[in-house]
Length: 250
Image (spheres, rainbow, N blue to C red):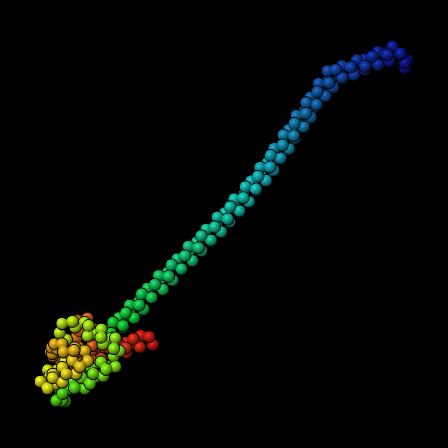
């Protein structure tokens, strides 16, 4: 077989033309397509990465909001719990206060009722003592029960300071001196009372006598602005007040 340089040269030229044609009409479009594809893929990857970042940011934001919501919820729960606790404490305190007030009112009412009952019983006791004393005096039927009281009146006036006695005398000034006894005085008794009183306080003034069984026993010497009491009724009342005062102070 004979080698032909012309044939070889033509083949080389054909090959170069083929390479040029492939490069111009195949490789360049394919390269452009590949480059565009790479660019699209890169842009897609960038977009996907951006979306992932957005998703991550959104997830982080949601987590933050969720944590904030949970914190707010816990805070609201604590505030509600504290408010309910405060209201409960306030209600308990008001209930205790009302109960204490009701108890104090009940105790006060009981004390008042007991005091009222005690005072009523005490008054009835004093009244009964007066009735019994009066009945006893009547049963004794003494000829002159007022005479010992005259002695008390005289002793009192004798012991009275001169200035005070002068004050009693000055009250009369033409007015009558009234002597009230529990029982009606006989003429002799009345005369004795008048003599003893005139010696000490009336200087000859007028003395009137009257009887008041309510005194039980004893007498009252009545001046215009003063009364001297020497009788069992006032004695029983004074004793009752003293007993009542001692009872309450004890």
